[in-house]
Length: 192
Image (cartoon, rainbow, N blue to C red):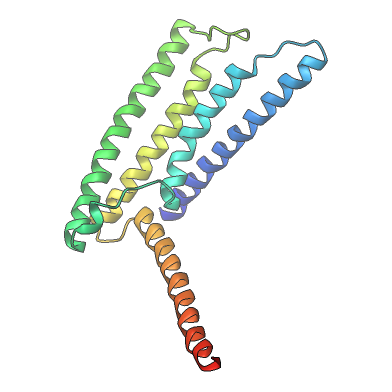
């Protein structure tokens, strides 16, 4: 199950990167269109690509431990209390994203049924960009449930583990530079 979930998160990250690249492609196409007397509304399409990129990148970023977390409060608790706070946060996030996913899929389906289109020059059917948002929110829900199950099982969640590793590396580097500085200080004193 773990390899399948990791593959899902990587696939979501790749889709996010693809839509991020498409923002640049649409802007270049608009610039080229100006030289060729061709009208292309890159603003609308790149906005749709940005929404898809944002939502599809959420689960990959969570799994990589790259979401911004404010640890001022949680860092003050003992490890056993911290675990319960992580459980509460993962559960609340999973419930919120599951509800949002349901509503996003419902909105995309309604847009398809009613034939809603964007108001710009291209009149893109709204259900097309809404699928990227709904899919990304669904994968994020899966990611949060995955983290919740890991935390309930007594493991450190992936996002907290990656964060701890990054902080540990920074602390090790700072300790090494301080050791070098203190080793160099007596050598300067002896030379004087």
